[in-house]
Amino acid sequence: MKLNKYEKFTDDLKEKLLNYNQVTGLVAVGSMSKKDHLPDEWSDHDFFVIVKSGYQKYFRENLSWLPDFENILLSFQETEHGLKVFYNNGHLIEFAIFDQEELFLAKINSYRILIDKANIKKNIEKMVNCKLQCTVFLIFLK
Image (cartoon, rainbow, N blue to C red; front, side):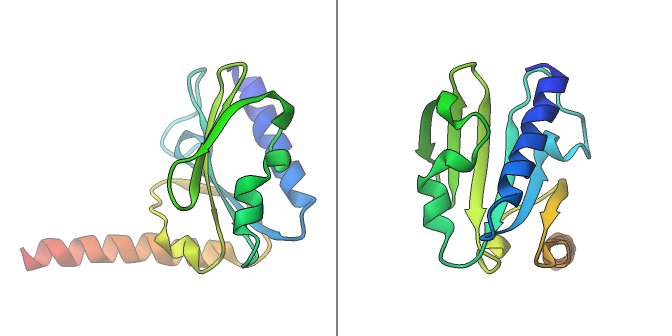
């Protein structure tokens, strides 16, 4: 996927999710975060959608909130929270749907917050800091 199409998909995703009152956050991870490296023509979209409690199943089962959802070729739930979606143009997206409490189950290295309606930034910073502190503590114990 060319970079301009990649960016348009990201923008469309954000715009569509902003239309849902149940959505409290969108967090780009991996190359989508643009932290460690920029997306290239082979990059997929990796992200977390944070929703109000009770709406996780709806967003996992009803994919009409995704850009170009009518061009989805295949989708399947890979983990308890995560899905993979393949489009008919070969593009892959991998995402997880969490509520605020479940977000602490995620592993995050590089991230960029695209939507934050519920102080998600504070919680993600806690997660990242805790993992760093826990790693240092475990190394110290060895």
